[in-house]
Image: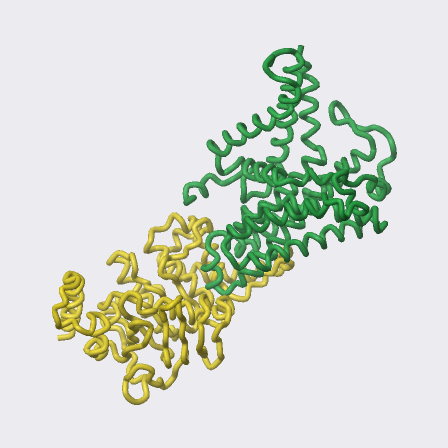
Length: 327
Length: 307
């Protein structure tokens, strides 16, 4: 028989998992890019990889403390954003999409190549960089929590830090998007020539937006690797598309959309994978092996997202009125 | 700013602005914009080739010419939306040749577009506020600290409401600009441009696609700009309108300025008739007789109005 309790509790765990927080933050970065500014960044995986590797390499190779490692990651993503933005932000939006998707792949392949094996760990990736972060943990050792949410001190510390960062990023984004700065940004999304004609330096605003959303992606990359190891194959283009799926699910030009979208995405994913794996075990799906079952969850999530995008294209938190005028 | 606009039957024309003969490139007594040797080619086509041109201050200047004469290209060049191959120009004595569009706008030379660019998914009020200059809160770091820009924002809002009332858009202030009609968008674009207190307003075909009822009110708004001390340069096809409100007319054809002068004089100029009708308009070449009839009709109408 199927153990429904285990399926639901495994799904519930995803609600506050650090991975959910990381995806939420990365999606918030894309909301700044795509939802508010209209920049088609398809290289969010590259920004996340820079965060993960920036942090891990600084700690392992150079022995930097936590704060310096974080700054190195952020610095790397600012430089990356400048490299992407300087040649492409003067061009039409589609060019940025092409350049970012290629640049993110270049970043991933650079981290995968054997040439830099001593520093990047090549395809095996990196691990053993969590000491500094764990040492900052003020929570005494032990196990805390209730029901499915029972973790040791490190896991709680990680969750608290991750969600604090997400909440701070949301508050920051909310504040700037309702300021005159946000008005210019949204104006650029609608028609950058009109904004230029009103005396705003469109290029500088687009660059600021690209850097800001990229930094969100980078910090997300750091949160992403704290419960696991750094593995280059995690940063494939599909990562960017999952983040886009979360963004569209929640609503592109919203603050809470990426957060709730990420929660729904991960809870659904966990639920489907748990359900299908156990259904195969129980012999409900005789035509399927357990390996195939592992892939089926992505198909089901894809269908779920398609249904939401078709029947609620503004996302969960999007303003329905806006949609009436979409060209 | 007054709210009681009465349709002006006979606008007050500014006269006697030029020095010497009213020939192409003639000097003005008080020019706001002086253009020298500007050219722009697209492949083999010389779209704009203007030797010398002066736009008078405090007057309404019309830029007319047949399709493909280079009016909009010249507009784009002067506002920094396109880069010239050669040439320089000064605005209020400052050289702004090749300057970026946003800097040109900050100097007080704002433009509107032939195809209206209302920012659809912003409210009418946000559209207006975007037009205000030197906003403290438009800096990313200061944007985080609302107490720095709250007062300025409130002041801009009052100014925007005042302008919206003048353009009869105040009841729409919280609607998305995308919900406005084509004519209302034109009005919004003009009102938005005025938020920056410009000295020279450049309107690219302000009447294109506007119904006759709204045309009258748009005309009054343009005349009001002049009354408030702004200079206006506009591109237009509608000869009636040009003759009605323009103080000075510049005629372009094939990239060059072929004539300029008082609107009544310039319509009689042989170069203008040639530009519109072709140099051999009185010889039967058997080409596109309909279009020709239309133009001849238009010119005749103008001459009739004159009498």
